[in-house]
Length: 254
Image 1: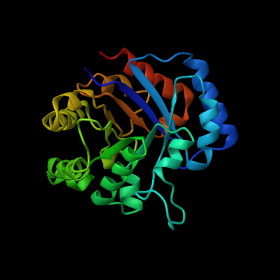
Image 2: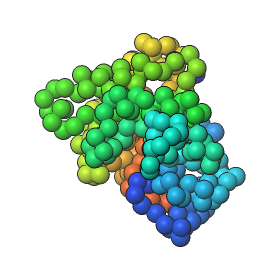
Image 3: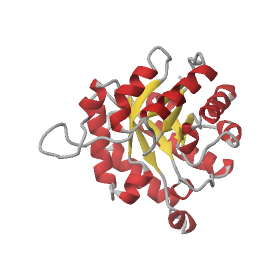
Image 4: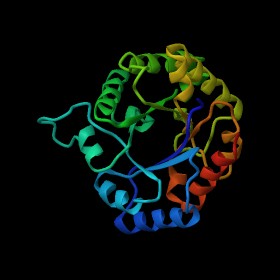
């Protein structure tokens, strides 16, 4: 069974009660019904999860969070547990985004623990992987990806766990520069082969998203790449028109 496609909006540190409402209303007006083959999710910051959950009710759009703690509970000031996210309606949670790797110093071991915490809470982790420009230029891309994959998949049960992968070349995040279709095809093929080697059924059903400056202008060319099952969208997800264009590109792709 082929992987379901997903378009997931990562709103990052953006939003307000009024702009969130306008954005969701804009998306719903332009996309009154979702295709069962292509899902959509939005990931606002923690304080807006209940509001956005209400705004998307009945639309088929799913709710996601941008991060979670590796801890289930306890004296961890400022942290948010997976069970809490699940309780307010989240289905997905982004884990290991390049900005958290870079700015918060999250390493592979911590990201693996957060992935397991998400799964144990009934959330689907969107696990982000990718290399820096320096790592790509020095020919380390495959080693970096394999290291990141192995750390996470040491804690995953391929027979029962549901995971989404997102390849986000770190040199393409927030820069407006996207990887070429050829680069994306190489990496997504590598990721698919890794998953299939773990378990054939798991490898076939696990979505692999692209997450590096995907927008309305390049969505069709990226969506056409083999083993691209959607996008983890940053700034373009804050514009209703553009977000829907990306969704339609995935829906039109074979």
